[in-house]
Image (cartoon, rainbow over all chains, first blue to last red; front, side):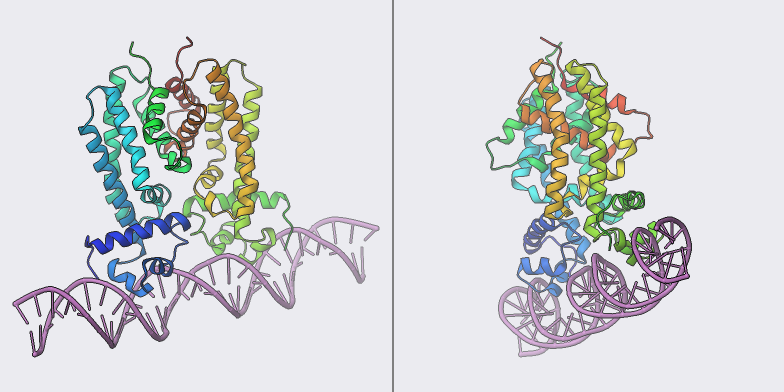
Length: 192
Length: 192
DNA sequence: GGGTCAACCAAGCAAGCGCTAGTGTAAACG
DNA sequence: CGTTTACACTAGCGCTTGCTTGGTTGACCC
């Protein structure tokens, strides 16, 4: 069997696995189903991944890393006032749902299926992402743009955003831009 | 095997099943684990439930029905101004997490494991619950207490609230009352 | 005191599970 | 050239899964 590498082949297999994990759930997805989707036999799958768990970890890692990169880029390329930064983060978050939806759904639904080591490693990635949010929310709180307890505001906003994977249709009439604007409007108050 | 009845024994078994479904997830919970938790043998389980799916449906049904009852009571016993009603709903929602947490976690995480008929039936229950929210939110929007698109505001609020099952510790220092107040403060604007 | 009935048990079946072992093959390497 | 490497295959092991079957128990009933 192979080491944990980052071959393009593995990336593609990971993408296909994400698709199946979303459709069926991790536990219901068998290695035979995965193999068929990938166009190989089930035994060959273990040449690319140590075990089934590692496939799950790869899916979630991909998605979270992408989200982190996109969020950082968005913050680098926006105005520096709190509202613009808030808007950029919300928009970036929703746009990842367009490109990386499967991975994010898996991350949200199947997190508990990760073994402890993977959960630890990926937890740090997720924390880094949420830290970006807390930074931006802190600025908004300091500017009086948002009111309330830092901890709670952060959870409520993350909840509202993460929940979008349940109902948001990327091919519908509302753009990520629309949603971001609406969310910011809902939670912000005019400067004192 | 039995018909789908509402015996107290079945209610108790359902409660215990909810506990296990939360700990392990539906797919990972075997009928043997369920039986052991219930203090019976795995075969006996099918005297009370047609199959494993029906146990899941029973768990979710219980939780949703309770939430609906509690929300209706809260609305009946609060002031009639939009803010009070909003507050009552938020508080009721969070209080059900104290008493019925397991069932709600299962409803949120394992919804997709339901077969189509059960999903249809329980979907109506959930719609009734969400309709209460939309009614209250409509009043708040009409009163200018909240700004924005009705559909989106509703989803964002439901997201923030449902997400609480992920992080809220009912035995921590924050009461449902605290959370409800904070959420309302975040999304409401002073009347014009 | 025979009949009824919910509740339970022991035993096991057929299917499916994750994963392994051993092999084949074609390209890349020295 | 022979060797290595990456990737795929076949075959199947050992185990677990949801669920069924046929039978037992004890409380209650007329």
